[in-house]
Length: 157
Image 1: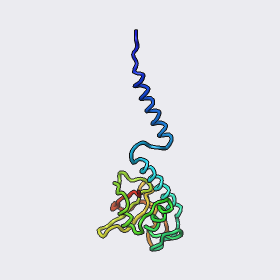
Image 2 (image 1 turned 180 degrees about the vertical axis):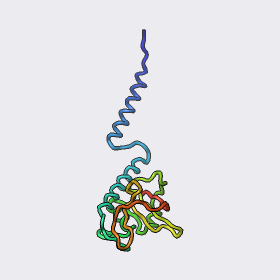
Image 3 (image 1 turned 90 degrees about the vertical axis):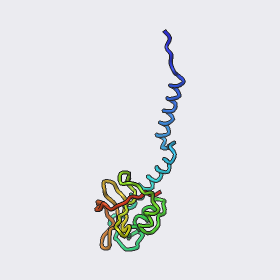
């Protein structure tokens, strides 16, 4: 009895699987755009940690850190320290981000609060419907639940 095998095809598939395993384990990717997404996720995670490290810093209108912040000053400072430049105001920051639906939000994305008159507040998404932000005069940088449904999400590129 003769057994026929498709050794070349099997080896080719095994080689491809091994190559993909090495690429995955090595931290690299082959998918177009995936490297940029992974880098952005790392930057956003770093910015989130920086914002969290400012817990308790007092709110001051127009302040951009390192000891006092307003809402957009905290996001600007956190991303600048993580290696990304953002504009000064919440509305301008929204204009510079890649807009993502709530279903696709990730830790480190920016959360923009809006009303009929436009964007009035920004924070950094921390997961589980919470943000790090500098809320208002008389308060401090803190972690808080998102209190409104009138929010948009933006991913820093």
